Amino acid sequence: MWTPVCGYGNDVVIVKTGRRICGTGGALANAPLVQDKAYFEMKVQSTGIWGIGLATRKIDLNKVPLGFNQADAECWMLRSDGALYHGSECIRKLGIEVQEATYWFVF
Image (cartoon, rainbow, N blue to C red):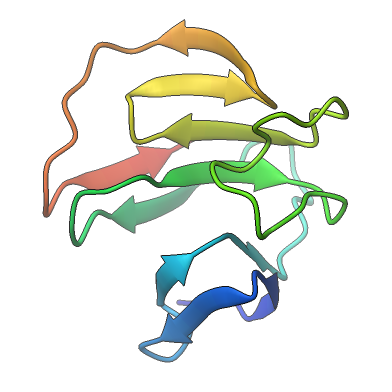
């Protein structure tokens, strides 16, 4: 099941019926979190700089990585360097290696 995209950066292309993001920038899905637990997943098609997580609509989807150099800290991300971030602050390094064809499950 896929979720419609409600916004994305200027250099972002959404393909595969909304299931793949390509280019540079971010995209927001149109799915509210209506419970106290949530789950989403992604597959890394090719290595590069990426992030997956939660953000408000206030985030600048053209700046990557999302939340970088933003004082309002409007996002919570697992980034391609294997660390968790709240805005530009590293909360925890996970010590994991990201490879192509890796699946990520975020709870």
